[in-house]
Structures are given as C-alpha cells and as structure tokens.
Image (cartoon, rainbow over all chains, first blue to last red; front, top):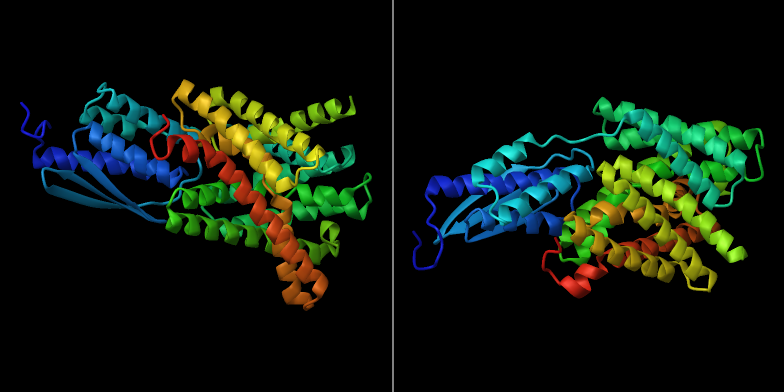
Length: 265
Length: 154
C-alpha cells in the first residue's frame, strides 16, 4: 500500500515513535563520546530506515534536537545529554542496530527494545589500573627514562588511576577529580626526584600525569570542526582545555608542597 | 641495524598505552588487538619519518593518515565505526607533556611574575600542542574527508 511518493504511509503515532527511537540512538551515541558526524549520520539513517522521509538533527553540547518529516508533517523532540563517559562498545552496538534496521532485519518496536536493553560494558577496574600504570610507564620509557623511572611512574600512575576511579564512582565533578588525581600522581613521583632514583627521575614526573590528558575530546573537537560542526568542536575544545588546566593546577599544587619543580625547570 | 632495534623498541612500548587507553574508552575486547597493532604502526611510522628529518607535526600527520586508512579497512570489514580503533591508536602520539607545560607556564606566570623565559615556554609548548593535535586529528579524518566526502563509511 504505497502512495504517490512511493513511501509506506505512517500514522502520526508511528512517526512519533520513529522520532523517539532515532533521538534515543543519538542520545546514547553522544553520551558515550561519539563524534558529531557519526551521531548525525546514524540518527538520520535509522529514522529513514524505519520509514521517515527525512531526519534533521541539531547537535549541541548538552542537548539534541531532532525533527522527523513525513509528507509535510514535522514532529520535533529534544533530549538533554548528560556525559556518561567514553564507551566505544555502546557506540559499536548502536551502530550495529542501525545497520540491521537499514537491512530491514528489525522493525521499529524491535529497535526500541534493543536500544533499551543496551548496557555499557566496563572492564575490570583492577585490570584498568594495571594497564594504565603500564601505559604511563611505557611513556616514561619512550621519553628515554630507565627502569627506575619506569617503576616510579608505574606506582604513581596506577595509584592515580585508582583515585580517579574512586572519585568518578562517587560522581565528583571531573575538574576536581582531575586536579586531585594530578596532585597525587605528582606527589608520589616527586619522591623519585627527592631520592634521586635512576638517571632521569624528572621524566617520571612528566609521564605519570599523562593518564589525565583528555585525548578523546581533543581529537573529537578537531574532527568535528573539520567536518563542519564548529559549535560542537569549540565546546569540546573548551571542555578539554579546562580539564588540562585543572590537571596543571593539581601538578602545580603538588610541586609547591614538595618544592620539586621536576620537569618544568 | 640500530634503526631496526629502535623501531621495534618504539613500536612495542607504543602498543601498551594504545591498549591501556582503549580499555579506558571501553573498546570491545575483540578489537583491543587492532588498537595495539594500529598504535604500534602509527607511533613506529612517526619515529621512522622523524629519523629522516621530518618535523614532528608532519610526521604525526603522516602517521595518523596511515592509521586512518588502516582503520578504514578494518571498519568496513567488521562494520564498526572508525574512531573505535583509530583514536586509541593515536593516543600514544598526543602531546600531553607539551599541553601540561603550557598550562603550568601560565600558572607560574601568574604566581611568580612575568618573565620572557616563561612566555617563551608557554608560546613554544602551546604552539607545539596545537599543531601536533591538529595534525593528529586531521590525519585521522583524511579518509572520510578525501574519499568518502560525507557518505557514511559503515
């Protein structure tokens, strides 16, 4: 039963459902750190696959506005977006649901059910602590440090990662979290300088705070701006700059306490 | 021979942070090995080109362009968005120390007073951070900007 335009007719209720499903997918993507181009493409493809004629999405830093169009009828809806931490597994799953809907393997109700069932997967926290400790220690090696620097960096950044997880778990503000974490990491690694462990103890001080570099937001910021989402790019860039600044404040406070300037001098 | 050893050492130690940060970003388990390989190739390629005298910004651009194309292949093969592999692979090249040095210089300039040496620290580190970052993320975007031009990849 098709009309002149060749589209299956949608009732108002069906169009509303499609709008809600599409924005739910967009919301999940943005909450878990997808770039704006991906959010826009995925919601549009999902909405069109489910029967809308077109989907228009406005992305902004803390909300999404989405309009679906069908035969001159528009339905618009808005959702707040709270940051829920970067989670690529969620992004993969939403993308997979979108591809399945596009191949007509899922109907609107199935897509909705699948989106509701998605649960963010998290790695075991002790494994993450171990790996981040090793990662920062590898950075100290890449900078040219010896095994002493490696060991000091490992201890400092593994402890810092533990503190960061604890604070994040208690829903502390990320700026406070990053400042406290940087303070602790720098404090621990400055003992390497005080006791002159190894050839370049100052490298450990530089490497142990690298777990706090907001790399994902910075890369997303530039790629958003390159692909035309200037607003989002600026918002992400500003957030990342503020995070970097609170890390610097934490490092500075720790350097003031121990009076070890380390890598800055 | 020295160069070969340097490269292997470099690639091995770059693969570890790529996996570590991929776990912070909750990349699915079966994709972690791709992050490690891409991280090692990217960082190794950057070190190699820098050995031949390329400045760090251009070397970063070349390395992430390479990662971008490798990621393109994997993304089409596994139907997974590209940032899942490529961002974690680029993390070992992020100029974190330069960024913190810039900010620390600013804080120091406020508390300890202005000196030309501090201003030099801030501007030099700040520009390095900015240009390396732009090179990194522009390199990752090159496949979609040059080849796909707005069409979806997966």
